[in-house]
Length: 300
Image (cartoon, rainbow, N blue to C red):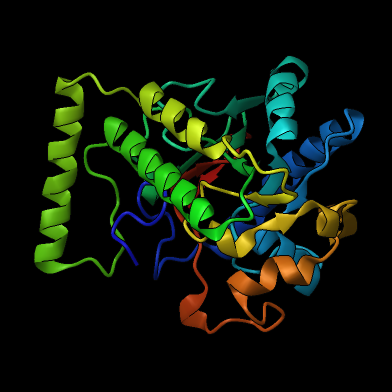
């Protein structure tokens, strides 16, 4: 794993578990957010699809994976942009819609739909100087090239600018637990030095976002291949529109969630045999050091 391999640069926390009651309460708030997200998508005919643990949970558990503490959905870029424009107008009384467009301190290249009045302070995001509440993640999918060399070039460029954007905001991001000893010290000092240099040379988060979007949205191919450039192994979760739409609904708790039509081709390259339960030491979550459920009760 590269030392800057995921947003912030790592979000999964090892060897930390929730109180069972608090985890279920968290899942139910996220389910509420998901239902509102789906309702707005259906109202405006905006296609979406579940990804990652949410998609696997629907297929394997008909709901949340038992230890999972988040919900992930995706939209094609044009639908994502429409949603992020419409949603604050129609649901702004209940939710904050986080993106680099709406919050200059937000360090990620995908959106979050955050329930107002809640708090969800992940260990990995404690330095985040922006509203932190219970949320679902919304990932934009961008058209990408059929040419593998060109596609990999775009992946490297987008990943580079996304990581630089984090360092314009965060001087000491979380490092993966396998980065130890002198490598950890070197990485920590490197991050701090880059953060200071960016300040000195007026390299702003918006500059990095603009560079990211330039590469993410610049595809001259007439391709039906789409990718999530914000994810390090995005190539494993590419979709073809002809194999993905129309989506198919699957049971998820007491509602239904949309999955791409050929979900096996979508999930297997990244997760292998996703219908098998992983070993206990591979059951990671994002773990929050503090949660406020918005009703006066707190937990972790």
